[in-house]
Image 1 (cartoon, rainbow, N blue to C red):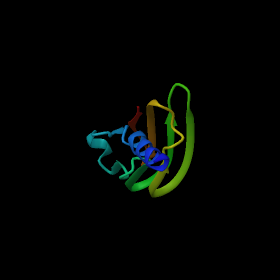
Image 2: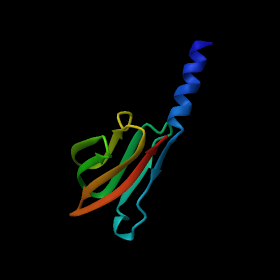
Image 3: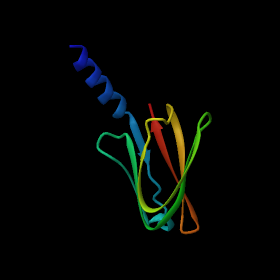
Image 4: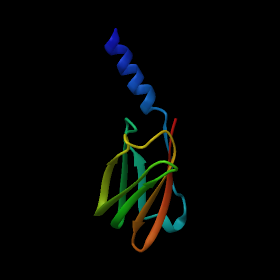
Length: 100
C-alpha cells in the first residue's frame, strides 16, 4: 500500500509541471518540449546550443552545452516559475517552466 501511495504521489508531482514555450518566429529553429514524465527538458536546434541558464527568484544554474540537442533534468528546479534562457546562434530564446 505504501509503494502505491509513493507511486501516485510521484506521478501527481510530475504532472504539475508546465512548459510555456516560445512561439516567436525568430525562435523557430529551437524545439522545446518535456518528456512524458515531465522531469526532463528536451531542447533541439538547427544550430549549436551554446548554453542554458535556469533562473528564478531563489535559484540560478548555468549549463554549458555546445551541442545541437540536449536533455536537461529539471528535478532540481524549485516550485514556482523558472525562466529558461537558451543561447543559440547569437540569439537568446526564453521560455518558462512552472512547477506547482
